[in-house]
Image (cartoon, rainbow, N blue to C red; front, side):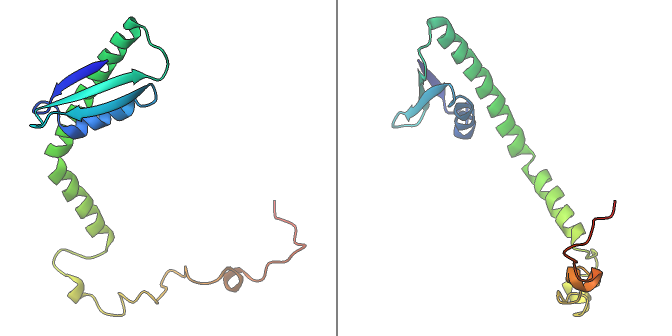
Length: 138
């Protein structure tokens, strides 16, 4: 089965994503012309497929392609918003305030060797030695 797609309508990323969804059912080959106006997709079923099954496979592929193209477009449009949200979350997790940068923090507050939460204390030092014959508390 061969499907010819217009590359102006479907971005290559969307085509590749849609093809990936079908690699468990078919061998897929991609080809383009020298001007890269159209992309040809060749399907060969991993098992013998009837005409009806090929038609269903084609319809499912076209639906998945539309889905991937829409997801790609929405992702592209929302890129700045996602970057802002992630940047804001990382900035908030750093503990810095907007008016004070790293220069406003004292050196001892940023010292990684200080263990204000007591996380770096070894288990044996914090809870004592582990006894080999000790019975677990129930």
